[in-house]
Image (cartoon, rainbow over all chains, first blue to last red; front, side, top):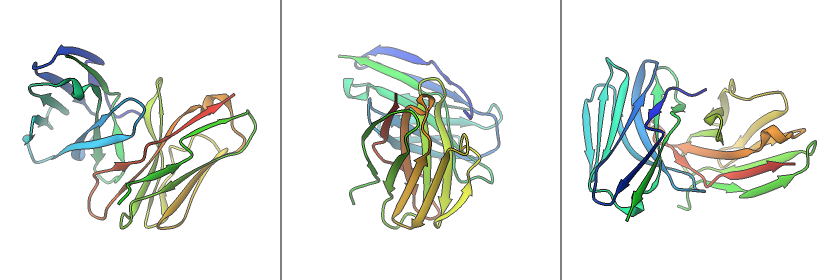
Length: 111
Length: 113
């Protein structure tokens, strides 16, 4: 079953703009991860943030986590056409090794 | 390493036929997961194995679905008999010990007509 929701469901921006995607979840977690999926391909891990962390950076990616609100956001700065893909959050719930995925955000970056 | 390898990439079968999907995880990874992706339901966990032992199969939709992992380098997901509502993309993923970063295969797109 889906852990939670991501919003927006779809996002279209111009190259060079920033893209922000949000994820909400419902349970107690060990960590939250973000994945990217290009059309017709498998998911690729982008970044992991632990439950005791509030913010993490990796290149043009910035992830925040608010465990009190059970929410996370992914910011992609200075977007490129190659960033066009679907982005999913996934939680490792406490006591369960398997990841539970959100519904995803489809990002379209216009060149 | 070639990554997680799934076969076949595409499968078209008739309703009632048996379908077997195959997965080779990354060498050294000790957990393996089968997910199903559809537009309506998104990514759903079907079953996962740790050290070749099934840990949680609560996501397996019906008795028509079964999964095995006879050794650390091979797993199968079988659907017998298949139905049109089983049409989806099936992903296999693996994770290394003490790490939950999942490495996904390219998926098998199953169409049951």
